[in-house]
Image (tube, rainbow, N blue to C red; front, side, top):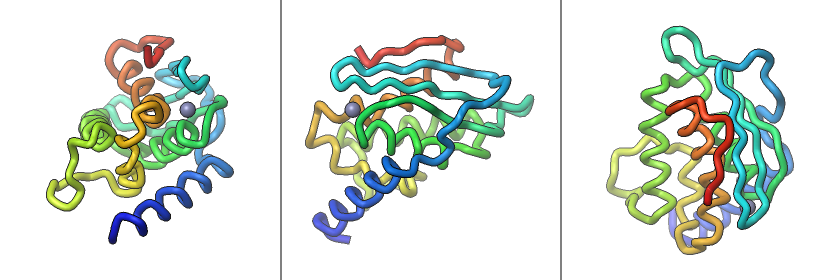
Length: 153
Ligand code: ZN
């Protein structure tokens, strides 16, 4: 895939997930619930998780409002992490973080990003990195200390 093909795919997927976000709902009795806020753009999300006793993410969903990038990133996050273990979720966050900061070479590295790779061009737009990573920071804070609120600032 060349760069312009990838850009096209990137835009299509982001617009599609913005219009029809997956797992856009509340979870009753979640094991983790975190609010994430990105003041620079105004993105505001609530992330819900239900983790079972084996640390497997049984269910994951989100609600909120924000730009297309923050919403599609949260949508793809929930799709990607459903059924994964906490360990796998942490690994994916590390890979996604490298992708957003331009440290990941998709051609070379053995990664597990799948569709998340559509955000590969975003490091060129530093102000949007926080939009794309908001849901992931919310996830990280939920896994780390069950914190109820996280800001990208
Ligand atoms: Zn945003």
